[in-house]
View 1: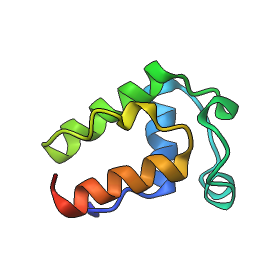
View 2: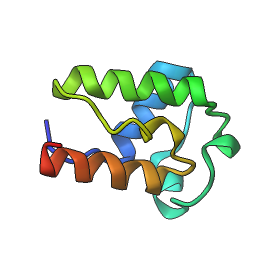
View 3: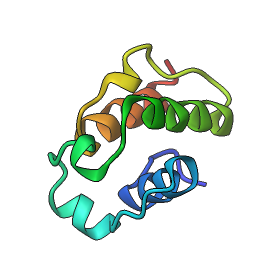
Length: 85
């Protein structure tokens, strides 16, 4: 398991956590498309945050569930994983 969350892993979390099928290649090529456009609401994102906290064994920043785009979310999550904050 890598210490960096990828678009592919985010797409899998969106599928498992919110039942949304998202093409990770499309998401990576348009990283500023809003989660709303993918059909992911704040509760769905909160579920993804919880799954990641369980996976990595520590909390993510309190505002992680307020990210609006995949790029914003991955940047926040990956910065947190690198710093261990």
